[in-house]
Length: 75
Image (tube, rainbow, N blue to C red; front, side, top):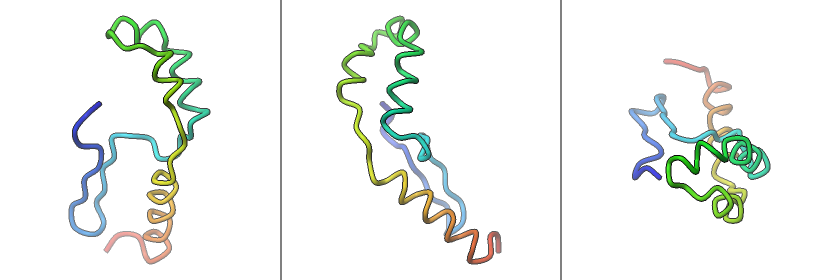
């Protein structure tokens, strides 16, 4: 629910506001587990669960991270 979820500084510093290793199944279980906390924040967990889908972007971020490490890590 934030406007910015990713930032990059140079070609080696990445910040993400999400968990690229999570797929829809993991997120759905997380929302089920935290249902009461979400409701206290005025968020409808059932609506989030219904709208939760996998995205190819998380895998792309992880894949690129692995490529950077293979290329030599930090410079």
